[in-house]
Amino acid sequence: MYALIGETLSGVRWVDRLAAEFVAAIRTPFLTEMMTSMTGLGSVTAGVVFVGLFYLAGWREEFVKSVVALSLLGIVVWGLMTLVERPFPPNPVCLTEGDAGTTSSFPSGHSAAVTAYAGIAWHSDELPFAVAAGFAGLISFSRIYLGTHYLSDTIFGIGLGIAAVLFAEWFLGRVSEEAIIDRLPFDADI
Image (tube, rainbow, N blue to C red; front, side, top):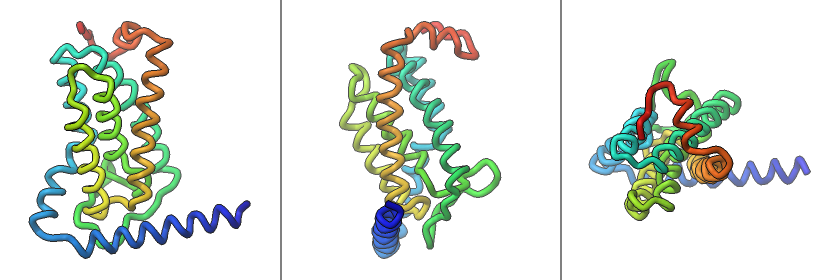
């Protein structure tokens, strides 16, 4: 059993290395500038802005579902980054440094968040799914392109984003939106 796990992880590292070498080979100044500009849409700051826009637009279902999904993702991603402490890929062109920045390559929180936005858009009457999914794909690729994450970190982040939305939908099927809104640290009249 341990041998199979070891072989699987070895295969994942091999694919990760090939993907990192590929993106390093295709980097251009123009593409790097585009990817650097785009990747911020998956950040915590962007998440707060998107949730705020859902609130201001009066999109109650999207607002509550994003609060639940992104709250869960924040805890899970931080916990995994702290536990795993995977080093970054070689030759990064964009890393956040400092105590408040990214501390580990695994998993991609940006990919998790943008996948959650796309998942929320899937069942939304307000949000365009195709646009959200397109941005999710581009932002997820940007994390690999910029050398901030390996391919497997990004794929795992995408899986986390899907799981967070599924959990939020399950949870909101058992707990009312009103119960979530009542527990927010501000008066939400939505």
